[in-house]
Amino acid sequence: MPPDPSPITLVNSTERIWRKREGRGQDPVPLLVSLAVGLAVRFLAPRPAEVTPQAWQLLSIFLTTIAGLVLGPLPVGAWAFLGLTATVATRTLPFTAAFGAFTNEVIWLIVISFFFARGFVKTGLGDRVATYFVKWLGRSTLGLSYGLAISEACIAPAMPSTTARAGGVFLPIVKSLSLSAGSKPNDPSARKLGSYLVQSQLQASGNSSALFLTAAAQNLLCLKLAEEIGVKIANPWISWFKVASLPAIISLLATPYLLYKIFPPEIKDTPEAPAIAAQKLKNMGPVTRNEWIMVATMILAVSLWIFGDTIGVSSVVAAMIGLSILLLLGVLNWEDCLNEKSAWDTLAWFAILVGMAGQLTNLGIVSWMSNCVAKVLQSFSLSWPAAFGVLQASYFFIHYLFASQTAHVGALYSAFLAMHLAAGVPSILSALALTYNSNLFGALTHYSSGQSAVYYGAGYVDLPDVFKLGFTTAAINAVIWGVVGEVLSN
Image 1 (cartoon, helix red, strand yellow):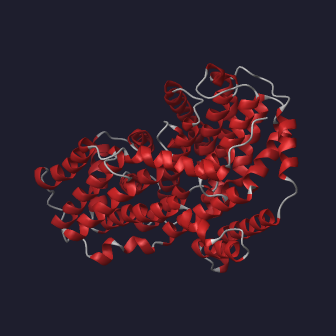
Image 2 (tube, helix red, strand yellow; image 1 turned 90 degrees about the vertical axis):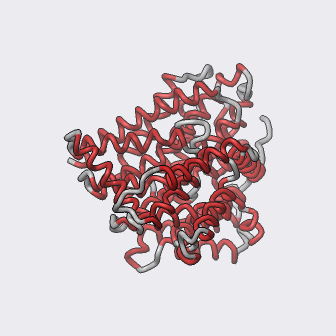
Image 3 (cartoon, rainbow, N blue to C red; image 1 turned 135 degrees about the vertical axis):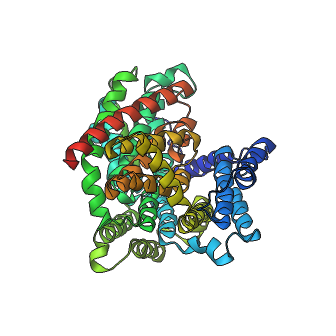
């Protein structure tokens, strides 16, 4: 059996590949196009009478920032900082307003979630849990796929980073099993086993992320943005799970089987997989002290996330308590936190994007846009269910233009939620449906999310298959979530 790649090494190399892809050098064409978008809005497009000059200028800077996130003239964090500088230098926003989102609790909760994910990878706990499922269910290729998918769903609420789960836990296991079966990356033998396992795990991961509020960073951000517009969900962790559980579990169970039929592996049986997993568990030895601490800490954190509203402990305070325990007991050290560059990068650009979006809401841009869209929808005499379908589909497939789920949420979630409300769609339905879709569109393309980049970078799937399977699975998820959601709403 080939040796497993080091999870920490794999996560770090994945971050470098992802960042390189995002940056794309200092290409002047994306730079000029991004600037042209904002300048055209500022100086060529007529400003509506109901929009103030300050709001219109902020909109032009925001659109330039979003264009840069899509086209990538600079790395995301650098480009966002330029946008922030522009808002302050042009006096569009005062310094305190421009930097106000850096104190946002949800953003700090997302940052801390990266540290939790690092703890799972560093201790090997996530790897151990997944390997147990391979041992129990891995006698066939289909069973192996179910074992990996179910194990991700089990650790998702306590490991709030889909990318970290992919790069630090599941891809090393998939690669090891595939290589042991003679399925090599960038080779015709990839279709033996690796191609199917990679695509099955990627497509199922969106449902794992949608199943729990704390399973992905963008979930927390969506609910925060919804709250700023006036849509507040009581007891969010439990309410989220009640609505998501049935469609997510059905999609999670359907995905491996459907991909098994439309993208079949050449190897149908994997009788050696349980033995490989058993040997790996033996090599790992008994559960370590740090793994037990990680288990106990995450049980505490998840419990506080679930019941925190009742006892007066906010989600971010629960996360801070958990991280403090990991630091005090030596599971993580401060060097681990400092080396988690993706967390600090996210803090920088995410806070900037959220801050701009919040100020656009305060200055009336979002309400103006939503009213314009509502009038267009009303001109077609659409009922609110029809408007709901049009807006949800638009929000979903616009993601072909984005290379990040969180960037998409920060740029468009508030506007689309306001459009839903203006069209008469029930508020809670609107907020949750947009959030669930923010997870499901993460597998559309090879660039649509961090986990997509991780799995595509493994070299087991060709680009045409990525797009074909991404669209097909999206359609299947739309049917499952739509039908089940309709039944639950009735």
